[in-house]
Amino acid sequence: MDLESFYDRFRSMVSRVEETLTSVEQDLYKILLLYFFGKSWKTFRSIHFLCKQRLAEDAGILTRSLFDLVVTLLYIGKAPAERAVLYCEYGIVLKEQLHATLSREPEDPWRQRILASKSPEVRMKDREEYERVRKNYPKQYRWSGLTTKAMAGEVGLGWHYDFVYYQLSEFAHTGPNGVSTYMDFDKGNGLSFKE
Image 1 (spheres, rainbow, N blue to C red):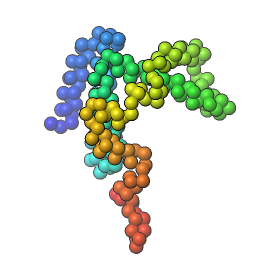
Image 2 (cartoon, one colour):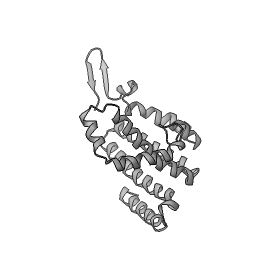
Image 3 (cartoon, helix red, strand yellow):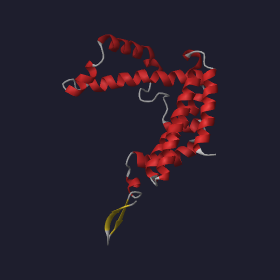
């Protein structure tokens, strides 16, 4: 099956799921499924394109992202009603974290412009929303309270984390082990870039 045929089947499945939606509150998990399916399709197509261009390392970075997406989706799926809300409302926490980061240097004109772009009413509403949900996130920098590794272990992908995610992090974060995939050093010829 070619990619376009696969996409047609995928789109048909999405349409069937969309037909069952009644409200955001009742169907938040289904809505998240649609989001994750759409995002994973785009990421997969990008990986496929990069591989065809012989850009394996860059495809690897997106593969890591796709793995993270799968782990997150499977983790949410173990308790969909509770975890879908936790995942979505974490956006409120991220918004508050961004505001706190921008507020650290109030004399910076760029930060001032960004902060001023929100009306006081919107800012107050954001703060109220944050106060409403903050107790659900004791670890403010993890929506689930777990690391990606811990979530992967919980959904049965611990080995995959160690092999796929961890190894590909070298490319994503420009780690020293990733250098050898881009460059060669020969004492006689010096430094060369791999194609």
